[in-house]
Image 1 (tube, rainbow, N blue to C red):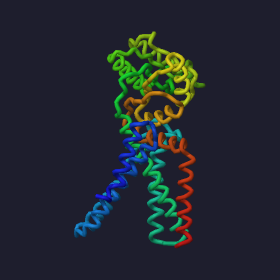
Image 2 (spheres, one colour):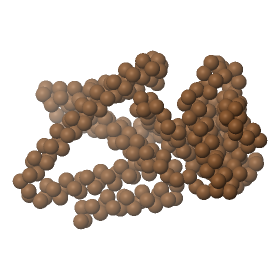
Image 3 (tube, one colour):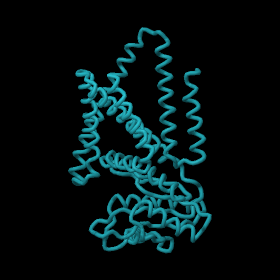
Image 4 (cartoon, helix red, strand yellow):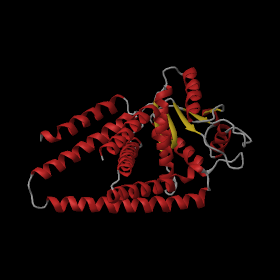
Length: 334
Protein backbone atom coordinates (compact mmCIF):
# COMPACT_ATOMS: atom_id res chain seq x y z
CA UNK A 1 0.00 0.00 0.00
CA UNK A 2 2.85 2.52 0.47
CA UNK A 3 3.12 2.66 -3.32
CA UNK A 4 -0.29 4.35 -3.41
CA UNK A 5 0.61 6.95 -0.76
CA UNK A 6 1.64 9.70 -3.26
CA UNK A 7 -1.62 9.25 -5.20
CA UNK A 8 -3.66 9.37 -1.98
CA UNK A 9 -1.84 12.47 -0.78
CA UNK A 10 -2.31 14.25 -4.12
CA UNK A 11 -6.00 13.35 -4.16
CA UNK A 12 -6.38 14.77 -0.64
CA UNK A 13 -4.67 17.99 -1.77
CA UNK A 14 -7.04 18.08 -4.76
CA UNK A 15 -10.12 17.75 -2.55
CA UNK A 16 -8.96 20.50 -0.19
CA UNK A 17 -8.09 22.78 -3.12
CA UNK A 18 -11.52 22.28 -4.73
CA UNK A 19 -13.27 23.03 -1.44
CA UNK A 20 -11.26 26.24 -1.06
CA UNK A 21 -11.54 27.42 -4.67
CA UNK A 22 -12.94 25.31 -7.50
CA UNK A 23 -11.92 27.80 -10.22
CA UNK A 24 -8.22 26.89 -10.48
CA UNK A 25 -6.39 25.15 -13.29
CA UNK A 26 -4.00 23.76 -10.68
CA UNK A 27 -6.92 21.59 -9.50
CA UNK A 28 -6.92 19.89 -12.89
CA UNK A 29 -3.16 19.32 -12.81
CA UNK A 30 -3.19 17.93 -9.25
CA UNK A 31 -5.99 15.52 -10.16
CA UNK A 32 -4.04 14.41 -13.23
CA UNK A 33 -0.90 13.83 -11.17
CA UNK A 34 -2.91 11.80 -8.65
CA UNK A 35 -4.22 9.55 -11.41
CA UNK A 36 -0.72 9.17 -12.90
CA UNK A 37 0.71 8.20 -9.52
CA UNK A 38 -2.09 5.69 -8.99
CA UNK A 39 -1.45 4.11 -12.40
CA UNK A 40 2.29 4.05 -11.73
CA UNK A 41 1.73 2.34 -8.38
CA UNK A 42 -0.56 -0.21 -10.03
CA UNK A 43 2.03 -1.03 -12.70
CA UNK A 44 4.77 -1.22 -10.06
CA UNK A 45 2.83 -3.71 -7.98
CA UNK A 46 2.03 -5.71 -11.09
CA UNK A 47 5.71 -5.86 -12.06
CA UNK A 48 6.75 -6.84 -8.53
CA UNK A 49 4.17 -9.63 -8.38
CA UNK A 50 6.26 -11.85 -10.66
CA UNK A 51 3.14 -13.15 -12.37
CA UNK A 52 3.75 -14.82 -15.77
CA UNK A 53 0.89 -12.78 -17.17
CA UNK A 54 2.78 -9.48 -16.77
CA UNK A 55 4.26 -9.45 -20.33
CA UNK A 56 0.80 -10.15 -21.77
CA UNK A 57 -0.76 -7.35 -19.73
CA UNK A 58 1.95 -4.92 -20.83
CA UNK A 59 1.54 -6.01 -24.45
CA UNK A 60 -2.22 -5.61 -24.25
CA UNK A 61 -1.88 -2.11 -22.78
CA UNK A 62 0.59 -1.13 -25.53
CA UNK A 63 -1.75 -2.46 -28.23
CA UNK A 64 -4.70 -0.65 -26.63
CA UNK A 65 -2.73 2.60 -26.56
CA UNK A 66 -1.80 2.22 -30.24
CA UNK A 67 -5.41 1.55 -31.25
CA UNK A 68 -6.63 4.48 -29.12
CA UNK A 69 -4.08 6.76 -30.80
CA UNK A 70 -5.20 5.63 -34.25
CA UNK A 71 -8.86 6.14 -33.38
CA UNK A 72 -8.07 9.60 -31.96
CA UNK A 73 -6.23 10.66 -35.12
CA UNK A 74 -9.09 9.46 -37.35
CA UNK A 75 -11.67 11.17 -35.14
CA UNK A 76 -9.79 14.48 -35.13
CA UNK A 77 -9.25 14.34 -38.88
CA UNK A 78 -12.93 13.64 -39.62
CA UNK A 79 -14.04 16.29 -37.12
CA UNK A 80 -11.68 18.80 -38.72
CA UNK A 81 -13.14 18.12 -42.16
CA UNK A 82 -16.66 18.48 -40.82
CA UNK A 83 -15.79 21.75 -39.11
CA UNK A 84 -14.46 23.15 -42.38
CA UNK A 85 -17.63 22.14 -44.20
CA UNK A 86 -20.05 23.46 -41.58
CA UNK A 87 -18.25 26.45 -40.07
CA UNK A 88 -15.90 27.68 -42.81
CA UNK A 89 -12.12 27.84 -43.19
CA UNK A 90 -11.22 30.24 -40.42
CA UNK A 91 -7.97 29.47 -38.50
CA UNK A 92 -9.87 28.56 -35.32
CA UNK A 93 -11.82 25.88 -37.22
CA UNK A 94 -8.59 24.12 -38.27
CA UNK A 95 -7.55 23.05 -34.76
CA UNK A 96 -8.90 19.48 -34.94
CA UNK A 97 -7.20 18.91 -38.28
CA UNK A 98 -3.94 20.46 -37.09
CA UNK A 99 -3.99 18.32 -33.93
CA UNK A 100 -4.37 15.15 -36.03
CA UNK A 101 -1.48 16.17 -38.28
CA UNK A 102 0.68 17.05 -35.26
CA UNK A 103 0.11 13.62 -33.70
CA UNK A 104 0.99 11.90 -36.98
CA UNK A 105 4.12 14.06 -37.28
CA UNK A 106 5.36 13.19 -33.79
CA UNK A 107 4.69 9.46 -34.31
CA UNK A 108 6.53 9.54 -37.65
CA UNK A 109 9.49 11.35 -36.07
CA UNK A 110 9.69 8.85 -33.18
CA UNK A 111 9.52 5.88 -35.58
CA UNK A 112 12.20 7.37 -37.84
CA UNK A 113 14.51 8.09 -34.90
CA UNK A 114 14.05 4.53 -33.60
CA UNK A 115 15.11 3.11 -36.99
CA UNK A 116 17.82 5.55 -38.12
CA UNK A 117 19.18 6.43 -34.64
CA UNK A 118 21.25 9.44 -35.61
CA UNK A 119 22.07 11.90 -32.78
CA UNK A 120 20.11 14.73 -34.38
CA UNK A 121 16.99 12.61 -34.86
CA UNK A 122 17.25 11.21 -31.33
CA UNK A 123 17.45 14.73 -29.91
CA UNK A 124 14.54 15.95 -32.04
CA UNK A 125 12.44 12.89 -31.18
CA UNK A 126 13.16 13.30 -27.47
CA UNK A 127 12.13 16.95 -27.51
CA UNK A 128 9.05 16.36 -29.71
CA UNK A 129 7.94 13.34 -27.68
CA UNK A 130 8.41 15.21 -24.41
CA UNK A 131 6.43 18.20 -25.64
CA UNK A 132 3.69 15.93 -26.97
CA UNK A 133 3.41 14.11 -23.64
CA UNK A 134 3.40 17.39 -21.71
CA UNK A 135 0.62 18.98 -23.75
CA UNK A 136 -1.37 15.72 -23.93
CA UNK A 137 -1.24 15.45 -20.14
CA UNK A 138 -2.38 19.05 -19.68
CA UNK A 139 -5.17 18.60 -22.24
CA UNK A 140 -6.48 15.46 -20.52
CA UNK A 141 -6.35 17.27 -17.17
CA UNK A 142 -8.26 20.18 -18.68
CA UNK A 143 -10.96 18.02 -20.31
CA UNK A 144 -11.53 15.83 -17.24
CA UNK A 145 -11.68 18.69 -14.75
CA UNK A 146 -13.82 20.82 -17.07
CA UNK A 147 -16.24 17.88 -17.18
CA UNK A 148 -16.27 17.70 -13.38
CA UNK A 149 -16.59 21.47 -12.98
CA UNK A 150 -19.57 21.54 -15.32
CA UNK A 151 -21.41 19.12 -13.04
CA UNK A 152 -20.95 21.01 -9.79
CA UNK A 153 -24.26 22.19 -8.39
CA UNK A 154 -25.23 25.85 -8.47
CA UNK A 155 -25.12 27.48 -5.05
CA UNK A 156 -28.48 28.01 -3.41
CA UNK A 157 -28.26 31.80 -3.30
CA UNK A 158 -27.42 34.15 -6.14
CA UNK A 159 -28.40 37.74 -6.73
CA UNK A 160 -27.54 37.89 -10.44
CA UNK A 161 -27.47 35.62 -13.48
CA UNK A 162 -24.96 36.85 -16.08
CA UNK A 163 -25.31 35.53 -19.64
CA UNK A 164 -22.21 36.08 -21.78
CA UNK A 165 -22.78 37.27 -25.33
CA UNK A 166 -21.47 36.10 -28.69
CA UNK A 167 -21.69 37.35 -32.27
CA UNK A 168 -25.04 38.12 -33.88
CA UNK A 169 -26.30 36.76 -37.20
CA UNK A 170 -26.79 39.49 -39.79
CA UNK A 171 -25.80 42.07 -37.21
CA UNK A 172 -29.02 41.83 -35.20
CA UNK A 173 -30.26 38.23 -34.76
CA UNK A 174 -29.42 35.94 -31.85
CA UNK A 175 -27.76 32.76 -33.25
CA UNK A 176 -28.65 29.25 -32.00
CA UNK A 177 -25.50 29.02 -29.84
CA UNK A 178 -26.37 32.25 -28.02
CA UNK A 179 -30.03 31.25 -27.81
CA UNK A 180 -28.89 28.12 -25.97
CA UNK A 181 -27.05 30.29 -23.43
CA UNK A 182 -30.13 32.43 -22.93
CA UNK A 183 -32.30 29.34 -22.46
CA UNK A 184 -29.92 28.02 -19.80
CA UNK A 185 -29.84 31.47 -18.19
CA UNK A 186 -33.64 31.47 -17.95
CA UNK A 187 -33.58 27.98 -16.42
CA UNK A 188 -31.02 29.02 -13.80
CA UNK A 189 -33.00 32.19 -13.06
CA UNK A 190 -36.21 30.16 -12.64
CA UNK A 191 -34.46 27.72 -10.28
CA UNK A 192 -33.09 30.52 -8.12
CA UNK A 193 -36.48 32.26 -8.09
CA UNK A 194 -38.10 29.00 -7.04
CA UNK A 195 -35.79 28.92 -4.02
CA UNK A 196 -37.13 32.26 -2.86
CA UNK A 197 -34.68 34.60 -4.54
CA UNK A 198 -35.28 37.48 -6.91
CA UNK A 199 -32.17 37.62 -9.11
CA UNK A 200 -31.54 40.11 -11.89
CA UNK A 201 -30.47 38.71 -15.26
CA UNK A 202 -27.59 40.60 -16.89
CA UNK A 203 -27.13 40.25 -20.64
CA UNK A 204 -23.48 41.00 -21.38
CA UNK A 205 -22.05 41.96 -24.76
CA UNK A 206 -21.07 45.09 -26.64
CA UNK A 207 -21.50 46.05 -30.27
CA UNK A 208 -19.08 44.66 -32.83
CA UNK A 209 -18.08 46.51 -36.01
CA UNK A 210 -20.41 44.30 -38.08
CA UNK A 211 -23.37 44.49 -35.72
CA UNK A 212 -26.36 46.84 -35.84
CA UNK A 213 -26.84 46.92 -32.07
CA UNK A 214 -25.04 45.69 -28.93
CA UNK A 215 -25.28 41.95 -28.34
CA UNK A 216 -26.74 42.56 -24.88
CA UNK A 217 -29.68 44.48 -26.38
CA UNK A 218 -30.41 41.73 -28.91
CA UNK A 219 -30.20 39.17 -26.08
CA UNK A 220 -32.59 41.19 -23.92
CA UNK A 221 -35.04 41.56 -26.82
CA UNK A 222 -34.89 37.81 -27.39
CA UNK A 223 -35.70 37.11 -23.74
CA UNK A 224 -38.53 39.64 -23.61
CA UNK A 225 -40.04 38.18 -26.80
CA UNK A 226 -40.17 34.82 -25.02
CA UNK A 227 -42.01 36.29 -22.05
CA UNK A 228 -39.18 37.05 -19.64
CA UNK A 229 -39.95 40.11 -17.47
CA UNK A 230 -38.22 43.19 -18.87
CA UNK A 231 -37.75 44.78 -15.42
CA UNK A 232 -35.54 41.87 -14.35
CA UNK A 233 -33.03 42.44 -17.17
CA UNK A 234 -29.92 44.62 -16.93
CA UNK A 235 -27.82 45.27 -20.05
CA UNK A 236 -24.02 45.43 -20.06
CA UNK A 237 -23.22 46.81 -23.52
CA UNK A 238 -19.54 47.85 -23.47
CA UNK A 239 -17.60 44.59 -23.52
CA UNK A 240 -15.77 43.09 -26.49
CA UNK A 241 -14.40 39.84 -24.99
CA UNK A 242 -14.98 37.43 -22.09
CA UNK A 243 -12.76 39.29 -19.64
CA UNK A 244 -14.54 42.58 -20.33
CA UNK A 245 -17.91 40.78 -20.10
CA UNK A 246 -17.01 39.79 -16.58
CA UNK A 247 -15.29 43.01 -15.50
CA UNK A 248 -18.11 45.29 -16.63
CA UNK A 249 -20.77 42.93 -15.26
CA UNK A 250 -18.93 42.87 -11.94
CA UNK A 251 -19.09 46.67 -11.82
CA UNK A 252 -22.87 46.57 -12.33
CA UNK A 253 -23.31 43.93 -9.62
CA UNK A 254 -21.04 45.63 -7.08
CA UNK A 255 -22.84 48.94 -7.57
CA UNK A 256 -26.25 47.33 -7.05
CA UNK A 257 -25.23 44.98 -4.23
CA UNK A 258 -21.66 44.99 -2.89
CA UNK A 259 -21.99 41.57 -1.24
CA UNK A 260 -23.50 39.90 -4.31
CA UNK A 261 -23.29 36.29 -5.47
CA UNK A 262 -23.87 35.38 -9.12
CA UNK A 263 -24.12 32.58 -11.66
CA UNK A 264 -22.43 33.15 -15.04
CA UNK A 265 -23.86 31.33 -18.05
CA UNK A 266 -21.95 30.45 -21.21
CA UNK A 267 -21.55 27.32 -23.37
CA UNK A 268 -20.30 24.11 -21.77
CA UNK A 269 -17.01 24.06 -23.70
CA UNK A 270 -16.28 27.60 -22.48
CA UNK A 271 -17.44 27.25 -18.87
CA UNK A 272 -14.17 26.26 -17.21
CA UNK A 273 -12.03 28.91 -18.92
CA UNK A 274 -14.70 31.50 -18.15
CA UNK A 275 -14.52 30.35 -14.52
CA UNK A 276 -10.74 30.85 -14.50
CA UNK A 277 -11.23 34.34 -15.93
CA UNK A 278 -13.99 35.08 -13.41
CA UNK A 279 -11.64 34.21 -10.57
CA UNK A 280 -8.91 36.40 -12.03
CA UNK A 281 -11.17 39.46 -12.31
CA UNK A 282 -12.73 38.96 -8.87
CA UNK A 283 -16.20 37.68 -9.74
CA UNK A 284 -17.97 36.09 -6.76
CA UNK A 285 -19.86 33.23 -8.33
CA UNK A 286 -19.94 30.08 -10.38
CA UNK A 287 -20.00 29.47 -14.14
CA UNK A 288 -22.39 27.00 -15.77
CA UNK A 289 -22.62 25.88 -19.38
CA UNK A 290 -25.34 25.29 -21.94
CA UNK A 291 -25.23 22.37 -24.42
CA UNK A 292 -23.24 22.66 -27.65
CA UNK A 293 -23.58 20.73 -30.93
CA UNK A 294 -21.52 17.52 -30.71
CA UNK A 295 -19.50 18.19 -33.87
CA UNK A 296 -18.50 21.64 -32.58
CA UNK A 297 -17.29 20.47 -29.16
CA UNK A 298 -13.86 18.88 -29.97
CA UNK A 299 -12.59 21.87 -31.94
CA UNK A 300 -14.01 24.26 -29.35
CA UNK A 301 -12.27 22.41 -26.51
CA UNK A 302 -8.96 22.60 -28.39
CA UNK A 303 -9.50 26.34 -28.84
CA UNK A 304 -10.26 26.79 -25.15
CA UNK A 305 -7.20 24.74 -24.21
CA UNK A 306 -5.01 26.86 -26.48
CA UNK A 307 -6.36 30.00 -24.83
CA UNK A 308 -5.55 28.59 -21.37
CA UNK A 309 -2.00 27.78 -22.51
CA UNK A 310 -1.67 31.43 -23.53
CA UNK A 311 -3.09 32.59 -20.19
CA UNK A 312 -0.39 30.53 -18.40
CA UNK A 313 2.26 31.20 -21.02
CA UNK A 314 5.13 31.89 -18.62
CA UNK A 315 4.97 28.54 -16.78
CA UNK A 316 4.29 26.68 -20.03
CA UNK A 317 7.21 28.38 -21.77
CA UNK A 318 9.48 27.42 -18.88
CA UNK A 319 8.41 23.76 -19.12
CA UNK A 320 8.91 23.76 -22.89
CA UNK A 321 12.43 25.14 -22.48
CA UNK A 322 13.25 22.39 -19.96
CA UNK A 323 11.90 19.70 -22.32
CA UNK A 324 13.82 21.10 -25.29
CA UNK A 325 17.00 21.17 -23.20
CA UNK A 326 16.34 17.50 -22.45
CA UNK A 327 16.25 16.88 -26.19
CA UNK A 328 19.57 18.72 -26.59
CA UNK A 329 21.07 16.58 -23.82
CA UNK A 330 19.85 13.42 -25.60
CA UNK A 331 21.43 14.71 -28.80
CA UNK A 332 24.82 15.12 -27.14
CA UNK A 333 24.54 11.80 -25.29
CA UNK A 334 23.67 9.79 -28.41
